Structure formats: C-alpha cells, structure tokens
Image 1 (cartoon, rainbow, N blue to C red):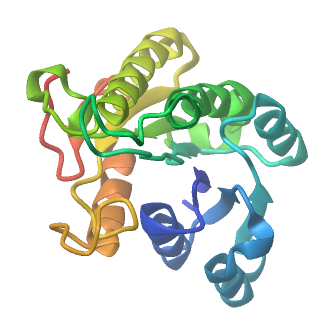
Image 2 (cartoon, helix red, strand yellow):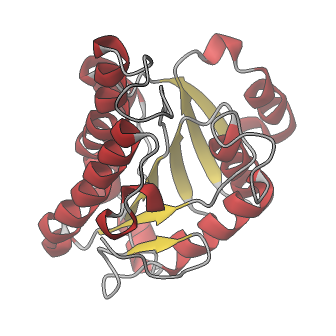
Length: 238
C-alpha cells in the first residue's frame, strides 16, 4: 500500500534522497524545507511526480511555522521523518563557532524542531484509519546520530552531540507516550554521509543512507518502538 510520508529538511542531503526514493517506490510525500522557493531539486522531482509530491514551507525552529504547515496539510500521514538538523561548530570547548547564536540555533533545530514536528503532525498520524486497516502502523522517525550516544562520547562537536542525545531521548519518551495510540517511534544514526554536513570524504553516499533508512522505518513496529539504531539496523547504546 502507498504510504503517505512527511520529511523535514527535504531539500538536500539525506532528506532529499529519502524523498526521491520514497517517490520512486510509489509513496506520496510532503517534502518540508525552510525555503521552498529555493528548492530547485525538489521542483525537479515535483515536475516528474506530479501530485505525489507536495513541497511545503516549514521552519523547524519555529513552532508557529510548524503549526501553520501542519494546518495546511489536510491528508493523513503514515510516517513523519524529523530529519531537519544542523551542526554549527565541530571543535571542542575553545572552538569560536560555539557562539550563543549558534548554540541556540542548534538547540532549536535539533531538539525543539523534533518536538514541534511531532506535536503538530500527531493528529495527521492518528487520522490514518485506512492505513491501519491495511496493517500500516503510524510512525515517527527521528534522525539522530551515534554521536549522541553517551557511551560513544567524543571531544568533537560537543553541542551537536548534546542535541542529538536530546533528540534520541525525545524519541524514547514519545515512544512511551504514544504507545497507547498505536504510534511507533524510533531514532536512527544515518551513517557518516557524504553531505554538506558529513563532507565529501564521508564513508557512504546519501543514496545508500536514504535507502537503508527507509527500510528501517518500514520495519518499525509497536514491539520495536523506542529503538535507537544505525541505518543498517545495529542497536546503539543510549
């Protein structure tokens, strides 16, 4: 059965590739990004896939923006992918990139953005009665990172690590809160990916990561809700 998917941060990197692959397999995608008027790659996909792709404006840091985007989307959803994220500095304590402004941006995008997205698209997940009847479980997928694992702590990018630890914690909390609603939640490490954030020397392509992530989202059940794992399905320590 065709799935109805919302993906935030869909204009580039992993988000764009997940959008491309979901469309290719026949899903209906709402691709959310901060500046849809500058999302040329999404425009090309829209031209190729017609009504199967809707491009929507959504600033993950702003609850008002997320709420407005949710209010404008009438259709139910089967999967919400909280993918929007940022890394503003890679160094340790003395990195000058760790400014108040950059830290606030990281906190609001990587943590509050996940919360706002789940909060305001929750009603869309609850509305998918037809999909439930066909055996599709409504799900929230949080794109986290193994860098957020306390057992895999490191000296680089401490603010990014902290925000991803919080995002994973949010996913775990939401899994518990939404269990009675039959909504499954998980958090995933997408791999070290060749994107603007990961760099050209990263281990895998965005295509590899996106394809594997979609498979993991499909495999999520109420029994496995609350997982924190890699794009290949390897469990990660919290």
